[in-house]
Length: 226
Image 1 (tube, rainbow, N blue to C red):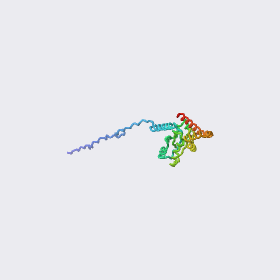
Image 2 (cartoon, helix red, strand yellow; image 1 turned 180 degrees about the horizontal axis):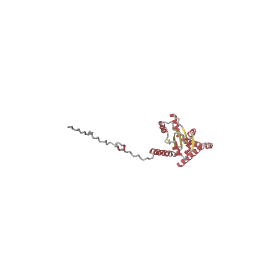
Image 3 (tube, rainbow, N blue to C red; image 1 turned 30 degrees about the vertical axis):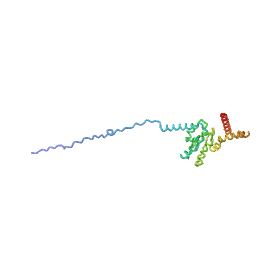
Image 4 (cartoon, rainbow, N blue to C red; image 1 turned 60 degrees about the horizontal axis):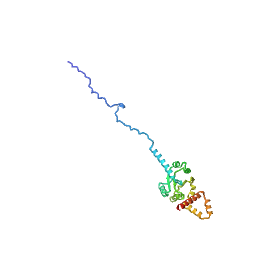
């Protein structure tokens, strides 16, 4: 008797579970990313500070022009910080040295007699404010500083009584008579013959005005003392 062999299909292992990892980019898991909100745009703080500082500088110049008799520009380029500090310390209390941009100084003096200083509005300048009638004494410390420190920086110009004085004209300002000299000249004229007074009146107009002012003040003081 023949035995029939039954053939069974080969048993294959069950297919592995399909991968649960998404393949599509939009299905991939990723850590959430948070975008920080962009701060709102405000005007530049730096620009505001700069504008405020400029306004303060203009106001400082204007305040220095009060009771000012002479405003002179000094060439600033070439000064060291140490030299400039020493120069400031050498000046009398009646003088003030300020570093400011030409544009700001021009804005402060616009529409005033000091506007005659316009020819100096170039290059870098330091500004000397003289608050005394004794102009020669006010300029002398700078000349002394120039000589001792061998500094070549010179005056680039100045305004006195509404008139502009260039660098070559400063000798006129530096040779002006002092108050003591005016008094001495006045007393000498009063004690000398009439021709002495005539000689005084023939002096430059400004000297005459100053002599007369001094004489009037002397009379007022004498009358007040009595």
